[in-house]
Length: 108
Image (cartoon, rainbow, N blue to C red; front, top):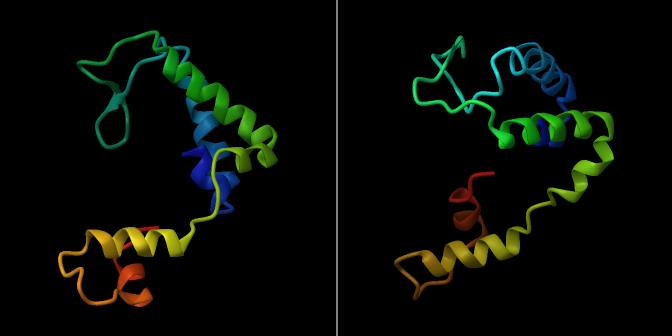
């Protein structure tokens, strides 16, 4: 989430999420996930003391402190490669796939 926020220029939204997580995660013993739409309850099948939860939290804090490090984890999409992949997966492989048709099937 933090990486996506940084990429979209919304570090403030990521900071808000990290601040909320900082208040709750330690107190809730680092659960695997929360239930309900608002994330008010620890999930019924949620395991506690999850290292990936702690790692994700620490990574988010590091990325917000050093946003330039985010570029190590994402890169700009190469639409030419994506176009070729979409065209090869298209059932009608005989006709040439247009750039517009390929781009319309790619979710960015």
